[in-house]
Image (cartoon, rainbow, N blue to C red; front, side):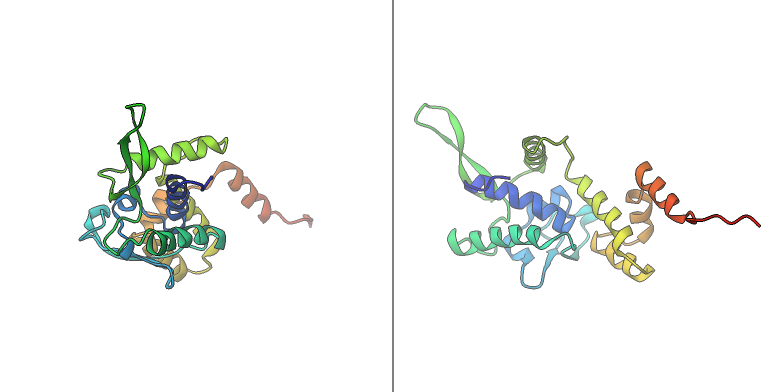
Length: 203
């Protein structure tokens, strides 16, 4: 994704943040800068200020999805703090400022110092980002499904899977397993073929 203007940088960082944290779009719209700890690699989903599901507070540690993705988010946070000089109570992903142009039309004019009132703009950013990359649209929630599928590859014990599930904000590990754990038909065939013995000996 391009990252020339403030809006482009925000949009790229937002999509990177969604896969890095698995946060729901409503929560993403309400995060403040102080809810992100880049050094510790975590976010504080404090339900008193963040719009979490069922108003539940929990801490999410960044998922292992790549240093490049983490760097995009880190660069964005650093940009807001050190170049824009925004403080801890400013939004992590600010709304787009709309202003009257010289042609007397309302146009995007950089970032506003307030958050979005809903998650609709986030879904629009996803749609535009995927479209620009020549890909079909995947909504923000699909990233949570991706992370649940990744758990199946990364987690080697019930304890690890439980930790991964809690990191998504699920109290019951079966929520992750039932709601997000479907195996694609392609992967199903791949797994089943892996069980086959290379040489079948019939007595």
